[in-house]
Amino acid sequence: MVGGGYLFYVFAAAGSLTAFGDLVDPWWLPLSIVLVVASGLALIAVAVAARPDLLGRVAIGCAVAYLLIIGSWFVAWNDRTVELDSGSQTIVIWISMLPELASISLMIGRRPVLAVVNLIVAVALSEATSALAWTGQVDYRFWTQAFWSIAFGGVYLMLTAAAVVFAQRLDTARAATITTARDRANEDLHDVDRRRLDALVHDRIIAFLLALRPGVPEPSLRAAASGVIDELDHWWDPTAGQSDLLDGREFIQRIRTTAASLGDAVTVRGDLDPNSAAQFDAEVTQALLDATGEAIRNFYRHAGSDASCVVIAAVSDAAITVTIADDGAGFDPSATRAGRLGLSFGITGRMASIRGGSSSIVSAPGHGTRVRLQWERQ
Image (cartoon, rainbow, N blue to C red):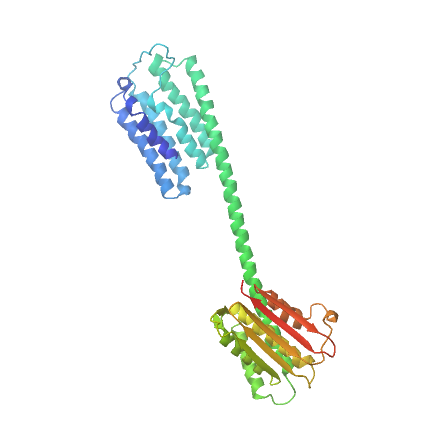
């Protein structure tokens, strides 16, 4: 905007550029026009290139260019004066209308001291040119006019300073917001990693250790040990061992595989909507599979040797429901101690961690247990 002001003023003052041309040598007018246009183009170039780091130096160059123009006027002046029209009290040489622009540029470029000093010096020199062109000397009228011109320019400079301070505060607030958002994103990533590691320790390592019995391990147990070691080697990779998407048929097959890997006392039934063609995110299916595995492990640990268990997986485009029901010993959910990992972490906590996930546990001593896991598409 300030650069455009330079160019606009040259265009607007085109008719009066030579009004006082006989007061100075011929070389001064072309020099002044070139320096003013160059100053405006330099400021515009900084804005177009989006290089605010260069603005301070370019603004200093603009201020020096203006002082060079004004200073060279005194060299080019030929001691002549002009007569004013009736009613006029002063004359205005076209270049004397520009001293505030360089100071505004300096203020925007965060050079406040230079901006104030330049305003005072540039205005004083520009008013001196007008005084010399009028009377041939600098008298009391010069001081009065210089004072009011500096005061008038100071108002614009103060407004610019206020705008710069506001912009700095806005930039600071924006940077703080970005930093906070980045920190929260990092915390979320760390939380995801922590939950994945907790799930690995609880669902794989602890479950495997609880399944160990004295003697030579069975082939299935050795295979499970290899699987646990492989997961430990790749626990940091969230895509390891799982595809990005599963359809309903693949999900039910994963339920069967999970149940079979834990024992042979669980019956699995799949209820797939024949019109279902949807695919489900790995985050959703993995949470359901892990929670199902935890419920089945709890069945083997607590239901009793004579108990039976059935897993029913119902899949449609809009929802997935997995029910794990047994006729074992049962328990009183209200009497379960707070923070019990098998329930609070392995089932309810895991389902609550996914959007659209929920769970319920119904049980009573001597009446078995029913765990219901549900996910609804949001």
